[in-house]
Amino acid sequence: MKIYRRLIFPLLVTTLLVAAKLYFRGESQNWEGILGWLPHINTVLIITGFTWCLLVLTGILKRGFLKQFDIGKEDNLRARKVYTQLNILQKIVNFVIIVLGIGLILISFEEIRKIGVGVFASAGLAGIIIGFSAQKAIGTLVAGIQIAFAQPFRLDDAVVVENEWGWIEEINLTYVVVRIWDQRRLVLPTTYFLEKPFQNWTRTSADIIGSVFLYTDYRVSFDALREELDRILENTPLWDKKVKVLQVTEAKERTVESRILVSAKNSPTAWDLRVHVREKMIEYIQKNFPESLPRTRIALDQEAIEK
Image (cartoon, rainbow, N blue to C red; front, side, top):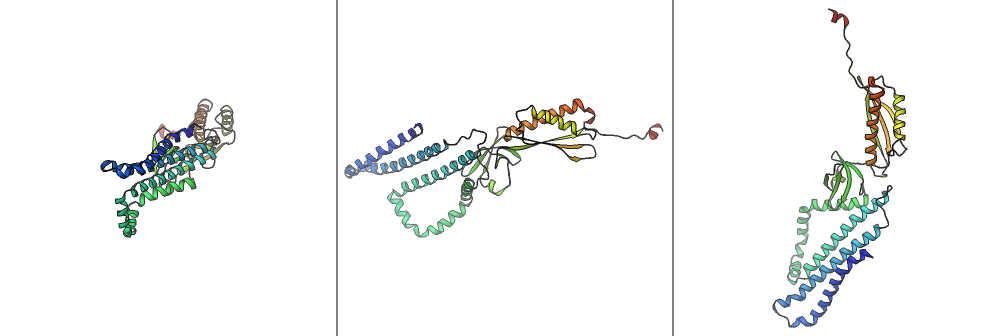
C-alpha cells in the first residue's frame, strides 16, 4: 500500500482543480481582465494534474509488477530481462504521456488552434523538414525501443565495449550507461549497440569461463601443474566445480604457453578466480620448478673463446 500513497497527493490536487473548474463554469461569465484568464489557467493545471497522475501511476504499476522478481539473487537472468523491458517501456509510455499533455495544453489556447488549422495544409512539407532534422534523434529513440524487445543486453549484464569491461547500469531511450570495473561510467548512445559489435558475457547465463595463461620453460612438468591446479581449485569457494582444464596451447622458440580454463558463477567471481589461480600457479612454479621459469639460452663456442 505504501507505493500507492504516492498517487494520493497528485490525485487530490487534480480533484480540487476539477472542482474549481466546475465552480468557474458558473461564475466566470462576469469576470473581466486578469480574472478572465483564471478558467483557462485552471484548464491548463487540470491537464498538468492528469499528466502528473498518469506518470505516477506508471511508476506504481512498474514497481508493483517488479516486486515479483528478485534481481539480487544469483540466477537472476529472467528478473534482469523483465527489469530491462519494463524500465524502457515505462520511459516510452511516459514520453507519450508528456507529449500528449503538452499537445492538449497547446490546443487549449484559441490562438494556437487557429494557427494549427491555418498551417495544416503545409504540414506535409514541415513534417519532411522536421523528419530530416530530427533523423538522428528519432533513430536513437527507435534503437531504445528495439533494445527493449530484442534485448541484446540487459540490466547488470557483463559487457566489453570500447575495450572496457563493465556492467550495464542504466538503459534509457537514448543512451546506455556502462559501469566500468574501476567505477568509471561509460555513456553510449543506444544506436551504438545496434551498429557496432560488443561482447556480452552474460547473454544467456551468469556462468562464465575464465582463462589464465602461463609461460614456462620446456622442462616444466605439465602433470605436476595439473595436480597443483586441482589442489588450488578444491580449496577456493570461487570455483563452481564445472570447468577445469590445463592445456599446452603454444610452443614458441623460448617458452611454452599453457592455458588454464576455469569456471565461476558470474563475471566478478570469474575475475577474482583468474587472479587467484594465476598467483598460486606462479608461486608454485617459483618454489618447485625455478629452473622452468622463462629463460634465454646462449650457446658459446668453446674453441672461439680459447683463441
